[in-house]
Image (cartoon, rainbow, N blue to C red; front, top):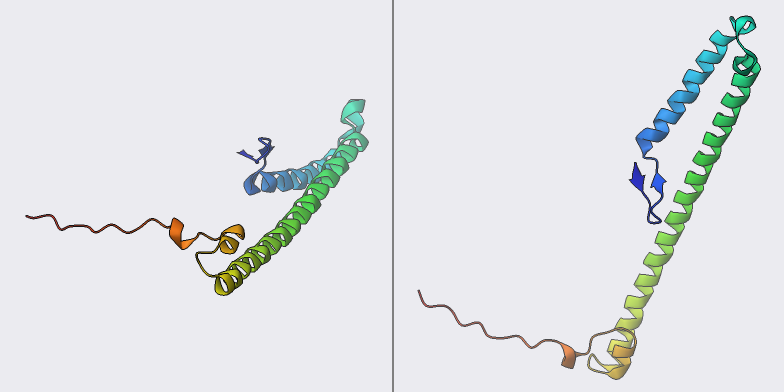
Length: 128
């Protein structure tokens, strides 16, 4: 089971598929249970099983809805962050064009001044 950023375990896609399989299996059991319901104890009656199956189905549906909403919101956030990044690059470019690459203004918007760049060093060839 994978863990989220909060450290809580998160089901993987395969585990969720198992849950859906369990619901389908439960529906099969429910059909078969109706034939032998009379001889079973009260806590194993069709009505109890059907209520638990409905509860499990509903909780799985709510989980799927929440996951869908989470992924939709994640897409929105990613688009907004990409737009913000593009805008930041454009702002830095404009400031660099107006004030120059070695200006304090360029540094104030997140650019690296030319005077702060590491000077290249000459590499002398090694004699064989």
